[in-house]
Image 1 (tube, rainbow, N blue to C red):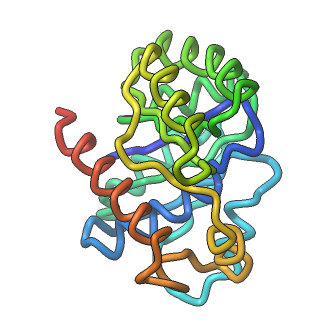
Image 2: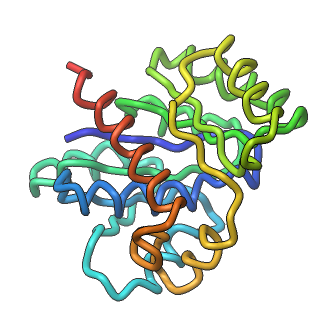
Length: 208
């Protein structure tokens, strides 16, 4: 079983949206069973899942204190991938979540303010000695700042080759518990999510 954690001290970077999309993409590509865990007190991922009609991915309730026990139980039940959403903060509870990760995905919007905010997240993950990957999210197509952001992030670590662009269908698809892959499977947004999952899956498969 692999554990993918989405983390960033910066709010509004798309952690919840990416968590849901990655989980659905993993199921669609045969990497399941997949389970979601929401450690954000706001419960946005849980609310999205509650609106789903599809039976997958699964949702597992777990507190930070019970996280390791819950992960062990999910492993015993044959879950192949767990995707964990976290609140926008750097706290000891976030550290406890990062420590169980096989890979940490750090969504970052291509803006100077967002790029300046990645330092604390990177420091935490490095202290926990966990592998991490940046994903540029909410990018403007063909904008120079997107490429500049990728270059800046590469100074801190690996940047996923798949960029998620700012499109209405990402937000609108989350309203009723679906994703762009389900609402508009032939869209550019759906292709970007598939490309991101393929890359993340490759990284996870290399972890011993």
